[in-house]
Structures are given as structure tokens and as C-alpha cells.
Figure 1 (cartoon, rainbow over the protein chains, first blue to last red):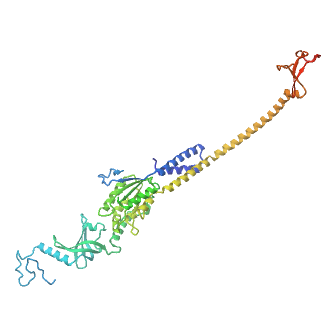
Figure 2: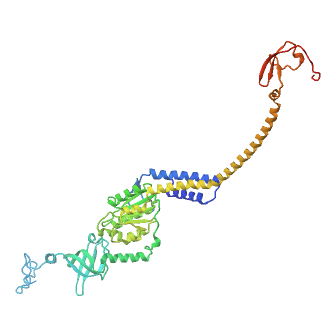
Figure 3: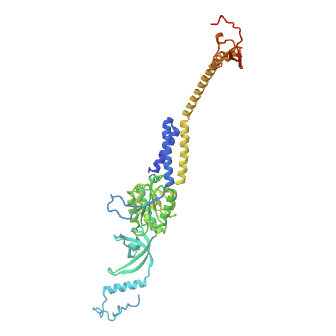
Length: 72
Length: 403
């Protein structure tokens, strides 16, 4: 699942490009299709989302280089 | 003290008559006996009390216990303040004027008259807290950690939100509820920490350190209510520096209206409550959905506009094509009319209309010659509006011009 903000940023860029640039119909159609797809995915992410909660274990990591343990 | 002390088994002290009779193993006091007695007398005669004076010779031991003297112009007393009493206090400095609440006693091992301190208040303006706060704030300012330019923008659509707080506090419940309602797209990473008590400072620092290495977009440092004294961990310079060093934006939700903590000052945003922190950290899903709707409309409109000139060209071309075809059709129609007029002129019906008739036998064969029409033969005669039966009458008159 692509990151939501990236999804939305790309979608906004597509809309701006379509609105401001003089494009071939071919190119415009391609952008439009991509925009519609990204919009669909973004909506899906918003509607279907359910909060995930993780708790980082309260264990002191012996070395500072290793990643902290994550408990699902 | 006017009355002489009279220990149980000893002869009276200070009696002028028999001064030397008690200078014996039986008569003399041991050091322990004297100090124990002095301790008892002092503790009985001087209950815990407030004392004012100046701090001198301050020393904090590794154990966390504090040792110092309290003095005025002419006297001084040794003081001890144990770690379990001082952990939430900023460290005082020599020369500071203070009020202490202490129990006077004797430290028998050293024979010292000493005060065991349970409360320490500064008489400096704003108190000890304020002083330590200003000192730490000055240090943080000097290092540029309070610069407004350092404040980072919060990410508009966070993927991962970390929370450092007490695992069983109301703060965590509130944050979880708000994020769940507004932005369930995110993942909530909870890093439990002790936010009050002796270990709070170390615990918060350790939690921050763990989060530093996680891919987190925004961090909420929260405290679940409590008294003003519980704020001390968030006024620790060590915690403040750890917060300032976090790689992601930090929202502080220490939740005290009147007291701004050092943690609040270094954080990228100060929220009045944990719920407010969670709101600040998240967009509202409903609003984002509405924004998506608007984007969808703009997308459709933009495509319409982008394709408009193509459509217009197509329409123009279509019109020309139609006009062209119409023209061609018109010409063809005219031609057709002309042809059909000529055709009409040639039509046998036109000939019949002019008064000619066609003779045919019963089989429909056209009878064109005299020889085909012997006298008495019956035949059919086609005229313009129908057919009649006929019989050849005698009297042949051949026409020389026809072969």
C-alpha cells in the first residue's frame, strides 16, 4: 500500500498539470486514468482504515545500534 | 538547662561536691550513651520545624542524597536531604537563601548535630524551581534549541505516530480514541514510560531513545494528569535536550495550563491536552475524503477542458463532412431527376399514352408483323389503361416501308 500522502500529492500534481498545461488528448487521457486510479486507492485507504496499535516493549536494548523491538 | 541530667545508673553530673568520684568505669558515660542521650533530648525538645538560612558546602552524592550546611551570620548546622525527598527538586546552589522543613537530630556515628530535611523551598524570587528552570532555559537558548526557526511543520498525513506516556494513563486512552476517529490510516506506536517518580527522567529519555531509531512521522510526549510536582521530569534539561534531538516533529502534551515546561519549549508544538495533541497530529478523515471528492471533480473538469479543442475540431470536421455530403447528394439527386425524365420519355407506357397499342398473342408474344396476324386470329391488345381481346378481320394491307 502506497503511502497516503504520496498518493494524494501525486493526485494533486496530476490535477494541476491537467488544469494548467496544454496537453495532447492522449497524454491528458493517460493522466486522467492515473488520477482516477489514485483517487480510488486513496478513498479506499480512507474508508477501510482501522487504527493499528503497536506497543514497543519496555526492554532496554543492550547496544544502541540494534533496532528497538516492536511488539504487535 | 537548669536541672542536671540524671541517667539511670549514673551518679549526678555536675554536682560540685563529688566531682571526681564518677571518673571511673562505672561512673563515666560512654560516647554512645552521650550521643544517644543527646539525640533523645534534641528530638524531644525540637520537633520538626521550618528553619531559614543560606546553603553552604552543597554536595550531591552518587546515591542521590544531598549534604550541605545551613548557616546564618553566626552559626551553621549540617543538613542531609535524602534522595527520596529531593528527587523532584532542582539542585540548589551555595549561597541560596532557603526555607527548610527539617527534623533536628544527632548523627550518632559522627556526633554531629544535624538536620534531616524533608522540604526545601527557595526564598529567591520565584523559588528554586523557577531558578533552575531559568538556568536550564538559558542553557538551551544558548545552544539555539529554543529558536523558533527550529520548529518543524507537522506531517499532513502521518503514517506512524509514536506516543511516549504512562501506559495506563488517561492520556493514552484519549490519544488512541482521537487518532482512531480522525485518522485510522495511521499506525500508533506506544512507548510506555514512567512519567513521574524517581525514575521518570531516565525512563522518558530511554523511551525517546528507542523511538529515535523507528520510522515515525510524529511523536507525542504526554503526561496523564497529576500535580505540579509531577512536571519535574518534563522540566529536566536532559529530557528537554533529548526531545530537541528527536529526528521527527514532537508535540508536547504535558497538560498544565499555567506552567510551561522545558519540554514544551523545545517541542515543535505545545498542545494543552493529550487529545489536542492527537488532533494536531492528525488530519480529519472526513475532510480528507471531501478533499478527494473535490479533486475528483477537478480531474473530470480538467479532462473535459483538455479535450475540448479536440472535440471542437472533431465537430467542425464533422460539419464540413456533412456539408460536403449534402452537396454531393444534391448533385446526385438532380442528376437522378434528369435521368429519370429521360427514362420516362422512353417508357413504353409513354408510347401507349400517345395512342399506340401493342398486340400480343395468348402467350404474351408481341405480334409485330402481318404474317403473325392471319384473319380470324384472336389476340390481346394492350392500350394505355388496360387490355382488350380482339380478332383479326379480313383485308390485309401490307405497309411497304416496314420490313
